[in-house]
Every structure is written in C-alpha cells, then in structure tokens.
Amino acid sequence: MSKLRVAVAGASGRMGKMLIEAILASEDMELAGALDVAASVAIGTDAGLSAGKATGVLITSDLATGLKDAQFLIDFTRPEGTLHHLAYCAEHGIRMVIGTTGFDDAGKARIAELAQKTGVVFAPNMSVGVNVTLKLLEMAARSFSHGYDIEIVEAHHRHKVDAPSGTALKMGEVIANAIGRDLNEVGVFAREGVTGERDPSSIGFATIRGGDIVGDHTVLFAGIGERVEITHKSSSRVTYAHGSLRAVRYLQEKQSGLFDMFDVLGLKAL
Image (cartoon, rainbow, N blue to C red; front, side, top):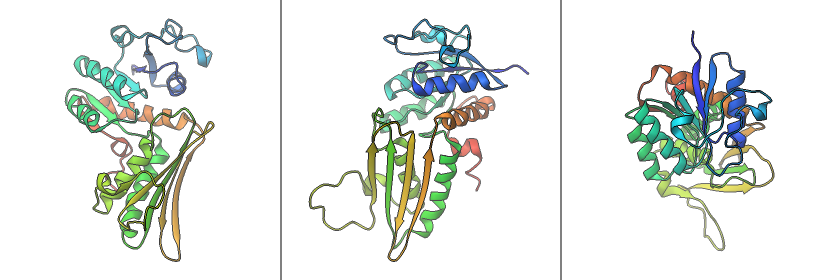
C-alpha cells in the first residue's frame, strides 16, 4: 500500500517540527512538503533537520512547490495564512487538517465554504484526550445546567497570541449547546472592578499565560455544597501531532466536507 503524502505548514515552528517528526516516525505516511513564511531563516533547509533526519524535502514559502506532491496539508499557523493555504488546497484537490485557532466568524464561514471543494478536518484541539474531555463536558453540562456556576480556566505558554484559547472556547460552545444557551450571549471573558453578582446563566473564562505551559484546561461546575472539576493537561505537543495524523487517515475517504475530531474519533455517535 502506498503511503499517504502529507505536507506541513509552519514547518520551522514548535508544532511544525513535532508534526514532521511524527510523520517521519509513522509507517503509513511520508513527508511530501514543508511550508513556512518567506522571512523564515529555515527557508531552503531540509525539513527533517530538527529531527536529525535528511528527508530531501526543503522548506519553502511557495505553495506550488511545497504542495506539488502532497495529498494532505496539516496547518497549525495563523488564521490569515491558513485561509490562504486552504484556498489553494481547495483548488488543487488537497485535503487539509486545520489546528489553527483564533478565527473570527467570517473565517469559520470561509472554511465551511471551501470545505465544499475538499475534505477538511477543523478542530481547535487535535488531542484525543481533549476531545474525549469535550464529550464528558457535554454529558456533565446537562446534569449541571441548573444551580451550578460554570467557569473555564485555561493556561498556556507565554508565546500564545490568542486568548481565550481555541480549546477553551470550544469547551464553552459544547457546554452552551448542551444546555440550550448561546455562548456569544452568555460568555464572560473579563472581570474587573465592581462587577455585581454573578449572572447564573453566564459561562466565565479566565486566562493564564506564562513559561512553557503546553496547555491546561479546567471546567468548574460550582454548586452549593459541592463542586465538580473536569481537567485536561497536556505535557507535550506530541498528542496534538498524533491526533492530527488520525485526522489525515480519516480524510482518506473524504473528498469534500467539513469534519471535526468528534467525527474522526466516532464520538458523535455516543
């Protein structure tokens, strides 16, 4: 059986290097391309350099060159770059796994539009554990919809540029949908000064940035006389890489359509 030909965007970044290492270690995939911004000092170098392997795949900023042999592209970059990559992939039949966060509503709508032309898995977190946690939150929220205050606390490294994290927002969306609320209406993203009593229908968010924290998320259901906390902690980005490879495998049979990690992991049927 021929191997799946996978390219990586943001190849010189922390996540890009982890993805390349995971692809090189897999038995059913091969690295077919590596993209980065034109200003990157890594342009023209071998994509396997950080993993100590010579791949013959050079990092480039040119989409036509970087994707000429690719069937799939994995992208954990920035919204504007990801949308540019997706438009190219949609026109050339390249399926895409998107782990980029920070999209506004217009960006999400554009992804849905382009997914009509090519298969896309789009999720704010590719970790298998995080997505199982999302399913647990959906189930818990239905039982804690009345009499419990819901707060989401997330922590990431000092270099993360968006807040709250895409995973925290996804947690809020899953909980809000489960209990019949609209996160755009009930989400509270900042508190300062005399805020008054807490609105019992609200879902609060708190953000921590510091050091090299890979990603911690806790959802607190606080009632009278008890509280329940559901927590997921990442100690390595490798879990995001392994989840991304599972998403690539899922897209083998999907020529078009928009999917998420619940589809990949079969969690929607639960």
